[in-house]
View 1 (tube, rainbow, N blue to C red):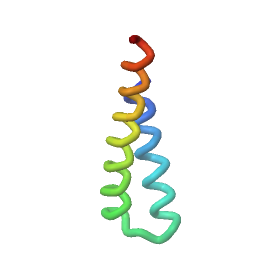
View 2: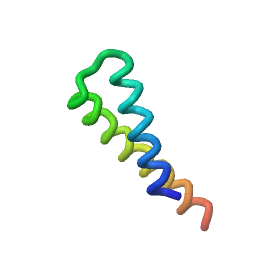
View 3: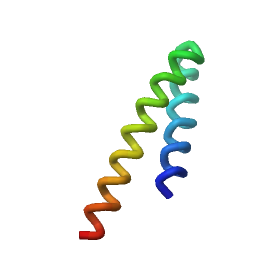
Length: 51
């Protein structure tokens, strides 16, 4: 689940950035940052739910 959310976030952010006119390299960099943030948020939600 965590991997799916991270990859889906990366794909969505990359496509949105390219749609708004960013270069593919810049869009990929922004997408990786968004992917890491989404993964951290999902991880925290999973660990808080277990407690």
